[in-house]
Amino acid sequence: MSAKARTRDGMVPGYGWLLGMSSWILCTAVPNSATAWLGFLIIGIVARRFSWGVLGVAAGALAILAHLPIWGQFGPVAVLVVYLAGMLAALWVNPAWLRLMWERRASRAANSSASAPSSSRTATTDAAASRQRQNRAAKRRTAAAQTAKRKREDAEAERPRSRTTAAAPAAAPPKVAAESEPQRLAERAGASTEGLLAGNPRTDAGNPRTDAGEPIDVNEATAAQFAKLPGLTRSRAQRAVRLRRDGRYTSLEDFAARLELQPHELVRLRPGLSCAPPPRGPRSFGRRVDY
Image (cartoon, rainbow, N blue to C red):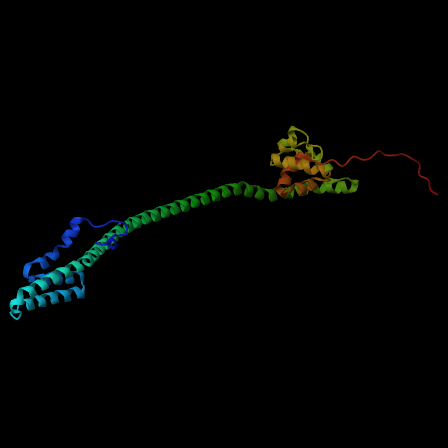
């Protein structure tokens, strides 16, 4: 058998397989060439080779022709020639026969080995797809839980804000009414309204911050004093001090606008704050002379 019969993996058939597949030559080795045609016919049918079937028919026809009494004394010679021709033809066909049968066997083995990994790959792919689906489902559940948690936190944060916003308009009318008289007095006296409101006992009464001490001046208070006021965080207190470096606060409204306070926050902080007017320069005394 030639090297062409090797498979892609480098394997070659064993001697047992070669002897077993070459056993058809025994049909041509029978004396008198009576069964040579049978061997060629068998391998032609198995290998589906028309030419080998034709050799079998020819071998049978020559065997019949060699046994006819037309040869006279040359009859044994004719039988021997046909016998040797059959043996030579069998030896010539056998390598091709072995190569063809080994290639068929190797292709069947390759197909079976390829089908097994494909099934294993299919199972692996199915397992990976199942894990991916489980991971996506877990991510969706986690995202839904986080969204629900954020909604609850937002709802809880909105409740006190809504109560404060609802309470601020209710408290605003009395304050406006209380401030109407100081505003008129301030306009007559030429002073600011904040100075009058800072010392008004009616606006400071009942407030726990002003009962404990005097309101703090927004132009003099430190960050620690600002942080003690209700609703002012440490960061806002430090920002109020930084903004004051750019210029003094002219009023509580200016303080609220520069600190970006909401109206209801200014209402809550106003009793604990004051804004003193800027100090006047030294008054000079002299005579007024008319020319």
